[in-house]
View (cartoon, rainbow, N blue to C red):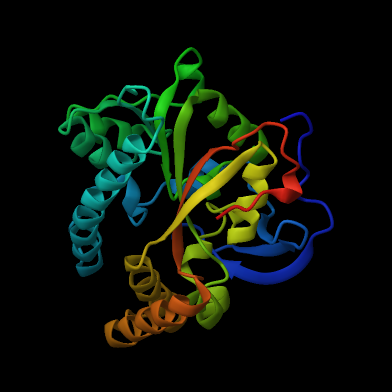
Length: 305
């Protein structure tokens, strides 16, 4: 990217949210209207400390609580769906070539996604900054690296970020580096919460997917489109993550009322998905992103869908 984007410019107040997982501290959520994106402020200098909790489930394989068991059960279903998606994305790459099956998973957690891909003939590579999660992955036969710098001289047909982009500190620079690692006909697959969903609107500051301060950015569909358009990349396809409205609503109920009201959470998740059938504003969305067809296209002329 030739010019670094200042996402902190002309911010306006949007909400005030509590860190329910680690510190109990409050953080401001500000809106950048130009990008239709929310920004968490302030960003703690010791951000890594805010991940140090047994409740941060993506870094563990815990099945201690009912919520843990639900999370792990749903994860097993979604892993298969993710595998189908990357297989499909590989098939639709240039039919005149025989692409390699090189996959980079950024924010790989405990390595479950890479494990299922490795078992299905993918050459798997992964990044995970958390030492404990890397150790858990290693026990499954999955070796993870700490950051992108470990892969400077490689390219990948598929790069995945499952609920990771919202954690990245230097956003524009990171997106630029991801593009450099993507093969010519490759696909970047990104899953992210959508603050314009009905469950976000209903739970407001208690919406669990705000997850401050770990989530530094809160995306809309338009913000994702603009971010990648600035790197001459376009959204090929958008896919809803329908389970997420239920999972997020369960946590949001706990944050709002002090306990998990399963019935109300299921209802709110159902309502959110029903409304999204018309609005397309699902709780979380997967974006399949590729290089723009022609480098000379004017950014304003591209349709991201």
